[in-house]
Image 1 (cartoon, rainbow, N blue to C red):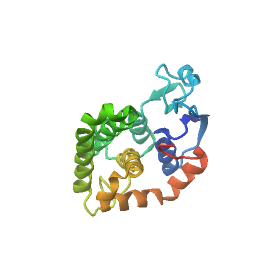
Image 2: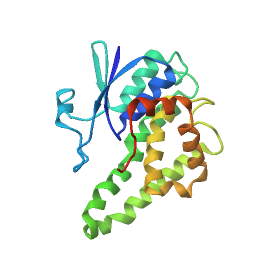
Image 3: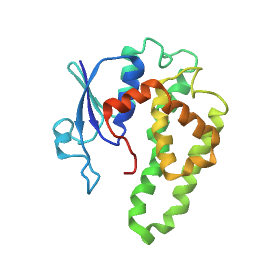
Length: 208
């Protein structure tokens, strides 16, 4: 049985979503953020030394990092449906998007989150951070265009990864300048499997 160590209001929601899209059975081990600090509980360090979520267990395998988990699930259970195999058309673009989500796109959002707590002391960094957020969203908007998905003509693991970025962008208001990304996010959130993942994972409110 697949087990997901799931922290509320976190990247682990995307793991529940892809599991629902794949129709796989899984068990959730839930964790709650501290109401004051918004940090993960220390009990997660008993699961993985970093004390972060998601962590997926599949038999004897234990794997962290949402991108690595999505890649593992697609390779192991996707049957070619949720991402092209190595050497197939679109594979390189798929891998680029899979890693872009956390490797590039999330960094300025995280910087904005942390520097926002510094008040005026962080003011010199603000323009650069906002410029990078706009840069990444512009890139995503241009590459998506009027297509339904980022790779192929169907949902892939890349979409699963990128939607979290756009959810953060929606919370910050940055997505408003990119109507096609906003429409894409709304389509993804309207998928039945996305709704089932919310039902299983519990309340999901980024920035809360």
